Image (tube, rainbow, N blue to C red; front, side, top):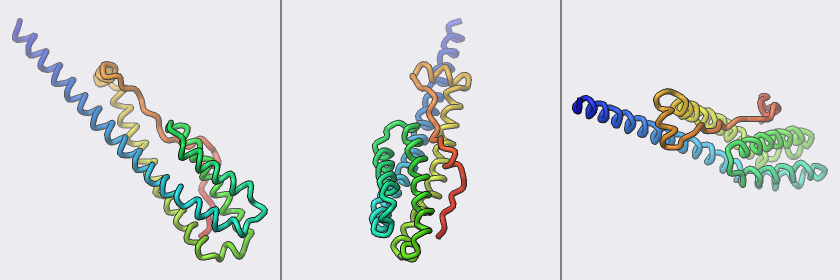
Length: 182
């Protein structure tokens, strides 16, 4: 009887330790994935002031749009919650696309080498953000499966782990394919 209880205790402890370690691994992968998104967003944040400065002289009648791009950049940089950051990022992506669309009406701006390079860089960064978002959401999916599946959900309750939020795009206009010309 004692040996059976001891074997059961060892098996339960081993199961707990293994599951706990899976939570640690999954949590670290999720943090790494978020860091990847953060790096790409920082690259975009760094380009936006240059973009605004480049177009400011050409787009004298579009000051509201330039101000909006700058505001959204600032709000997104300050957002701490993933859902909130996702909402600001969706708005920022739409504002940048609008800026590029409006730039089509300014032939001198469209031929400006600095503007064209910034536009190419932003398109490239948007692709990297999309890849990083996909990777992050995949790690969140795996983490959430661990939180919700039996028996790991019991360990999740014991170590106070809950589902993580996806980095989602809330704006339907952000879901549309971008129409940026290079």
